[in-house]
Image (cartoon, rainbow, N blue to C red; front, side):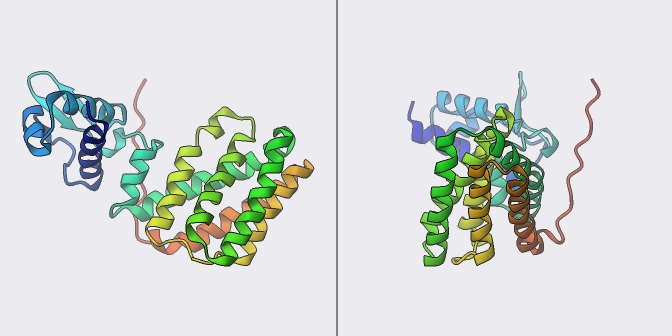
Length: 242
């Protein structure tokens, strides 16, 4: 099976579902998807399996492939995040991610100050200084690469495997903000310094300082992006009875 065909089928269907072009309740037939996408049945089958794992569709015997409502999607999956960031609900997605990161990253920074291995502490300090240089120089691709590395190390350095599993979500958030023009070419000097402050506090084992500096980063992030979600409705997911 061609990996590129498989990827194209997933991207084509997933993006359309998340954008609402294929609304909840819409039923697709495998044979129609073969014709539409110009791919084999096996490619369609594997693409549908991936979309099922994301909660976007379900297969119903003798009916077809039915699109599920947004409340059934996996909001933590990086693919769903990427598709949401590319659509009209970008602001709402950014808000949800920013609020999640605000709840988690300062705590992760404090934990990293107490738990991170020495090598990771050194890496954070090195990356934070490189970020400052790239930010001042306006090197957007380099800054994005370093920014993803920094926050990934911060989460994994906490020693909490659940925090560490947010790395993909954070990477998609930072990438999406850059791709969609929501990151400045030259980040604020204060934000660049706060990244250095977080890294140096973690290196020194100062959990309180690490948490405070990380909280400053996230509060400024929310303040900068708030206009993008000002009129976006919130999502209230129904609680499923056990």
